Image 1: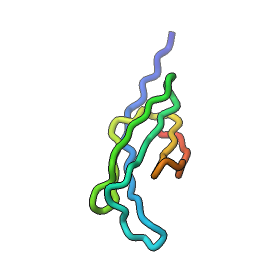
Image 2 (image 1 turned 90 degrees about the vertical axis):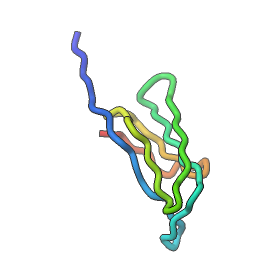
Image 3 (image 1 turned 120 degrees about the vertical axis):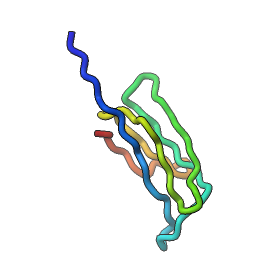
Length: 77
């Protein structure tokens, strides 16, 4: 049996409007589809529109949702 351990990483970003202004106090959800069942985490943006999710497993498939809409789909790593 081989076990591969991946180092967790942080996922961070900033939510802005179409004119580049930060959007504070909006909900950002991260859905980790690597594990079964899928794991969801939710945070609110700060005053400058920034958000942070700590300790996301490397190699996990992620959906980043802002305001309930999928904004980005990617693989951590």
